[in-house]
Length: 309
Image 1 (cartoon, rainbow, N blue to C red):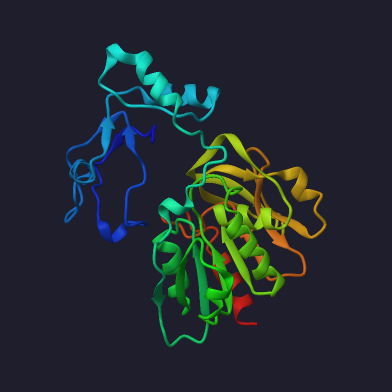
Image 2 (image 1 turned 180 degrees about the vertical axis):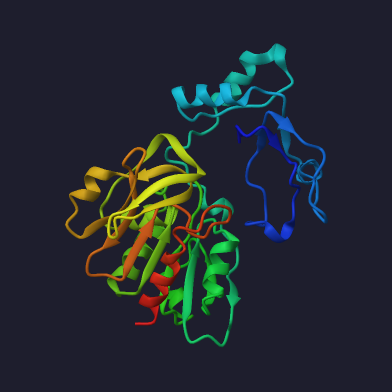
């Protein structure tokens, strides 16, 4: 991960705010790494990284580095102290797989199913974990849902034993195309007319299940200030986004069973879909605001209304 903000680590880490049980980056490159954390009862980022055996490279002109990445596209990289063996490092780096075609959901999905929220709730939601963030579950829980989170490769029939009123496809890393099992499960969910909501990678899986193509972006969307237009209301939304793949606009707009509901205002990429005749919709961005703005939080209420029908 490369950051452009000047100071990293000055807030400190509170595990109660963590959106995942693990750190999934291999290393961090930043301008200024702070060894002092300002918030009380917080853990220093340095201490957290050391305990997780992660590498950090600081005092780098990261804005110049990001300009290079912007012009040349996202790429594999290595942090090394072996400056006299650069050619050998390049050869090793070239052996690493590229992101296009890389399936990563299996690396981050839960290994065992677990429950979240109020067991006495009348509304039950089955969540397919492709790399879910904690605040998504919090948003479902505070709306009174009883949630069961399943590993990414769980059979549709197995999830039906939970007797869910609807399904959710979570965010996650990697290329959606290799997730053939999840795509087929999504088709079964839609065939049985269950309400279905997808975020980020889940949004891309829903697109693929409906015959829409996805592609690797030259540069992904990363940040908490991406402008999106809600095409149903005409309102703009500031959104949090973190993805390197996107839904293909041409195959989406030509698909008669699908409606584009949201569009990115910077590059006009597809930011949301609705499946006609189904209680199914999805967005490319993160409405759960963990971290980020709350402009898309209404989507959880929109999904709840479909579950209660």
